[in-house]
Image 1 (cartoon, rainbow, N blue to C red):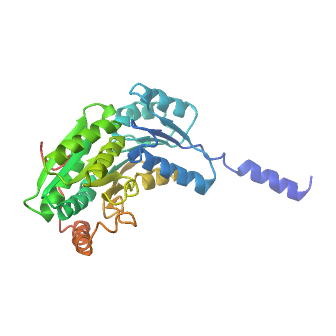
Image 2 (tube, rainbow, N blue to C red):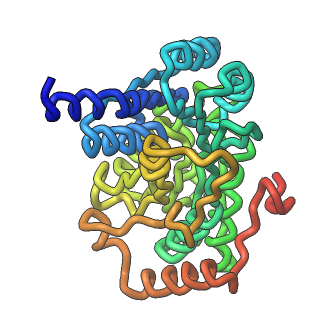
Image 3 (cartoon, rainbow, N blue to C red):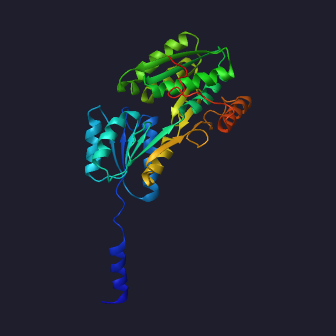
Length: 322
């Protein structure tokens, strides 16, 4: 046997097994909700394109599927297993304990286990900026908020939004509605449309939807009424150019991309400083955001990053209690 062949065999023997496939389990609302889940999908696709490797994924259609899907991924040896959404938390706690050799990651919840990375965002900081923008763009002095499922996480968006709106205009009036109390609230565009129309009837002329797929109905109703809407999670400015004032971008895509590459068990918190949240400005909304608005919002952004403005967190600071 020649030396070249021996060397080749040696390489084969010492090369580690191919990296296991990552798995992504989307939350209710579906992979293509144009918002939260879709941001996770974009991150996974970026990883796939960059590495040339496939990944596993699953869309939850009902609550019972969460554990089934996660266990199936674990049985296949998927690594890491990424749960998208707070609703996966209790399931991951159970499954991750049963598969201690696998790595898990959860977005929007905290699971304290040695093989789980928990990624949470300072949604209140990004929401503060778009709240400012809403108040500055409003002609009526009345702005609105429409949340999806009524959970503390979505109240966190609402609380940040109200703080930002009142920072820009102390006299602003904020109307708020939640779509529902079950996971179906993430995917109810017709209900989103109804809630938006009811707010417009009260004089609201800018509305922020933090409601997953339900937001699609809010944005359509806003366009039909000639008002302004603010998107969430993904940059949704392109959905209705001319009536989408901005989007509160939450970089779930970047989080999933990084998690697919490598997990770091423990807690990761992403705010303005870390580039985890922001407001979106592009060719689709540039005509709606004046130079003065941008200047004021960017000044506040710098002050939040520097710690000169502290945005209260609904979930931690006992703020904005409803």
